[in-house]
Length: 308
Image (cartoon, rainbow, N blue to C red; front, side, top):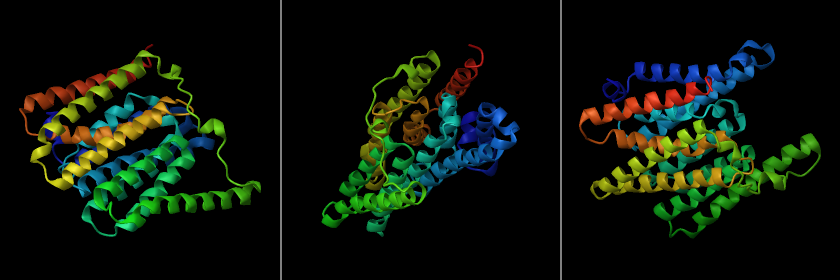
């Protein structure tokens, strides 16, 4: 049932996934939607959250990372609902938008066209993510990794990310001088990692993390099994997504705040890898069991927070 539904890419699929995602978001921000002072802000970030889903879908289909289905969107929704803190952390949502914009430009390098502008854009968006959540600036590392895969012999490519860093710094300083009459600087306490994971020490968060890790390992095993049969562009995309996953996990580990919402960063590439895993040929009942297990498990984790 679920396999047949999410295997397709029709308007009804996107509508249902959007409705479910909106339900979880509104449920966590219910009182903000009832207050005149915050209702506009709440709708704006609901639109941002839904736009993240649209952007993920665009990236995977445009770059042929997955086939025309809605498995990736389904995984994005069920993974995020296990961590309700994501729906209320607007800085993480903003940083995730810039990370996805950077990932979009990185994945599009496989065409071999306009590599330098894409490197600059990806670096620029990564630096913008840094302005929202400083640790998300680590995503800039993926730009250099992509240069290694696509045009490593062009020496000037390696310096382009530094130009983007300088441009964003100039823009941030200009805005800071205009509003505060001071140069832009990030407080040291917002950069240095704390390695204090006390916020994660509850059964709901640990259960969600366990589901994420298991999904990632299953996807990893299947991808490596089929890697030799794949074309080069697909293999490079997989390597980039694996690297992105490790970098995003690093953002969580080296965070200066250790907010649970930052788990959204690794959720993005894991959802894409998981979507590719679900579309691999196998007996339909296996996918059905996986989808139902994920659905019931993630929804159970979410609603348990209201009972305990």
